[in-house]
Length: 163
Ligand code: DAT
Image 1 (cartoon, rainbow, N blue to C red):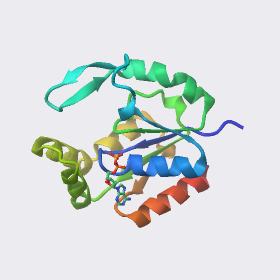
Image 2: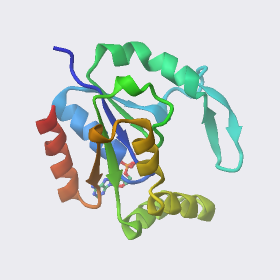
Image 3: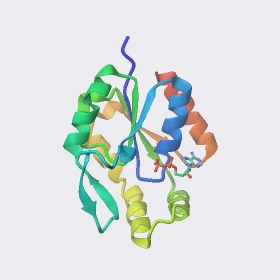
Image 4: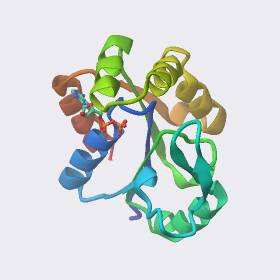
């Protein structure tokens, strides 16, 4: 049987990468961090000076991932979710963190004041929650807390059980 495709999404710093990599190593699913796709390829279109990051060409990313997603068994990690093909994913996990926890993690990353504020507000105003609910069937979107190691472990087991 085809293995499921899983989308992990959240505000940056909430814990997608930590959960996604650990889950992939335990489940054997393939982990793809969209933010880590090769910068030298054709997947980027310019540079965003304000946010200090390359601009993803979302259509090209979708074309690039299509074949792997058709095969199944992929965990996709990205801080956005409205441009992927809806039918790719069998389930969407939206990770959440308390603002004080997230703020400290982003500070540790050395984010600029602007990036700190933008990302904190993104979490407070539930931007990714709204985006996920607008992009996928409500029944397949699940929120998971991601504040501490115990919650991380629970999340890994929860997703393993779901598979
Ligand atoms: P993201 O991929 O969403 O940007 P990350 O996985 O890189 O986030 O995590 C950001 C930082 O927070 C990193 O230092 C690991 C830590 N972290 C992630 N999930 C955690 C959890 N459940 N408990 C404690 N620390 C966590």
